[in-house]
Length: 337
Ligand code: GAL
Image (tube, rainbow, N blue to C red):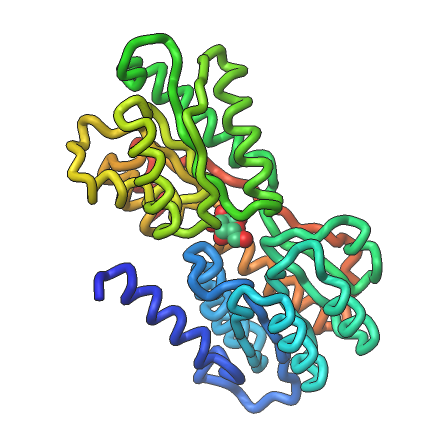
């Protein structure tokens, strides 16, 4: 098992075994226990796994700081909305105080909303954004995520800056950057915006782009590797830039180039989004020209902070909580350790 698979397996194990776990071992005798049911769309997603890890770590500090007990019941829907609906139904039956939902299908939250609403249990959706009309269906619904357009613009800016510093990114010197796009899930709010706005930002800076191809790789490293192998077969060294909607897909592109035995000096410039630990490693080693930090820690903490406020009976007026991004390149990647 390589290091990446091992890490994934450990996180998956933590998720699957966490049912009913409490996040602390120094619990004081307390009358109040906050019980949170958490369902994620897919246990193999690197970014979501890092959020889950932070939720667990932060809830442990919260227990200590607030002198309370927190029970987290964390499950994965393994890509099935029906499965996720059943999970939420169980959370409701077990009278959990709050439910966090990372929707499988962001257009299909009706069952969850109705279940939670009829039981009066607040739901905080996160990362996979439902449409506003659904959010308006009850005042016990909240959303935690990232500012949507910002990372795409920042990704474009990383490319613009890298090109200004190093015009030989245009390998054939035709004054046009030939690129391929690795896209997240079709219909995902982030995939749509990132795909459009990264390109728009680069073009607005005056750089000409030519799209050689694209692949939908569902945020997934191995799917991206397969897509990149296909794209490379079609366009080969003509590819000067790989724009990936997230780090895992950028890493999949790197895996493809490495498996083809292509010398690093011949690689296209590759850029991701998320700033996961593995993504930052690739920036440090110069395999990626940069990434955009998607604040998994901030979003995880926001979820827990809102949960705490609701648990305390506070009326939380705002429904949307969006965290900002920042740009990571080789120049500042050390600051993120
Ligand atoms: C995005 C993130 C991706 C993936 C996706 C899942 O915000 O950048 O890596 O985790 O969410 O919904």
